[in-house]
Length: 596
Image 1 (cartoon, helix red, strand yellow):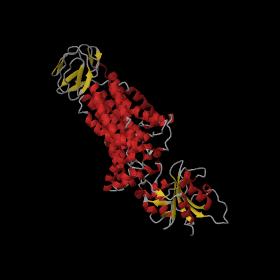
Image 2 (cartoon, helix red, strand yellow):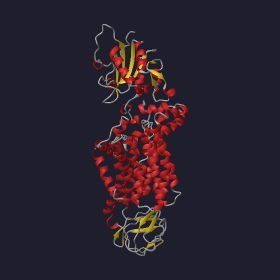
Image 3 (cartoon, one colour):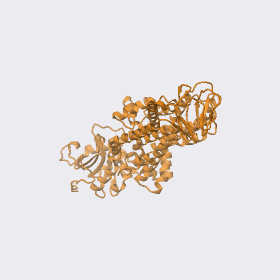
Image 4 (cartoon, helix red, strand yellow):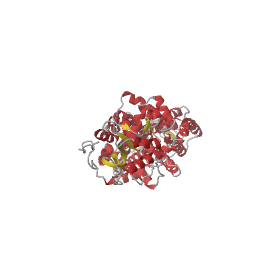
């Protein structure tokens, strides 16, 4: 948790919000009735998150505060993944799983984003831990905490619902009795009933994800690399190898493997018919990958330790047994015979038949009649001593060496991915930077200048950073976003927009270059009218460019009305930009404003 908190707080103030974060910022600052009205038409899937962030931003509206809940949620998720690993495979595996989760670049990316994905990942990790506890407890009451955690998690984002299928696969692989199925079924049914109205409302808002495409095998490979602590190179291939080794630990595999594969598999399959899949929607499945990698590393370490210990191996009745003693408890496997009674100091409790309980975990034990009396044992064991409440086995130096090797491996993995982490801390790595757009507008626009956003979603820059647009006139806006119950406001119809543009001789256009491509034909008639009027009646006088990504530029263009004697018009793309693609927009010298 300390590692995850440090990674999350590092570079938290990037100096700019991108589109989705700006939606969270401006919606959460509305009143509760305005948020409720918005959810009836758009973004119902994020309704609970907006209400939560409304309470958070009431304390202090700012970019850092916007992202702090995600940092805290990622920190909690790392701790829950570690706790789950401890319960499934022991302290070393739990510690390794938590640290691997914390240093994975995908975790750090969404830990610093003002959206709900890190909170959903923490909720799923907590629900999975409660699932394992409920199975071990075997009582009906143990399922209430599970349902209580999973219900708000699925309401935070409805695409967390596939985790129910992953948990069902886990129960099937564990072959739990009927009463366990009954307890889980009641909890899962309550969660489904609670989420069903949200699903029904969001179906009418499916146009919001119309930009998604059916995923192919390239998306599967991309997800596999995102789930690795090292997306490329030897670290990635070592991660896959350790995951394969970790599958041999059945207790961990039956929990981690369904969590890793089932939710992404369901969403990718459904997306072949109706696209719903994106990597961020299955961030919570990353916990399964971290658990498998840590389990595989632990298994490799134990194998190496058994080879190096030599005469310190512990054997019961001629069969190798894994013995680990700390504060009086240890695990024993592959002991043959017909067990009747085993007693020991510490946490080892009694054995009846073939079921044993070691430190709260059930283990299959088959042993000859065996008796542990105080500090002595009558089982043929070499190099094993009971010292008070501790058990000491030969090979302590080897275990220390393996522990140091593991720490160095994790540290080396993190250092090798430092360039990726640094890149994530840059605002230019996000799809856009609305602070840059606002700064350009503040520098170039004069009071009273008309501005046109192409497409209308570009108005998010004015909503997130209003300082750059305070003294200008949004010529297409008919009703503001809060009053209209929309994300970026309602615009005038095509006829009214033509009349408004006919009354001005110059207009600033905020757009992405792809939106102004003459080959681009938007389906919205208002957007088509904007492009048509600009092409027919205006010509480009001035252009300022801020390159944010390789494939897209943020443009601020000044269009002036074409005179009767002017040429039909030159291509806007042929106009040399005032701010070049490689020049920082905020500190660059811009050309003087043209004469009125």
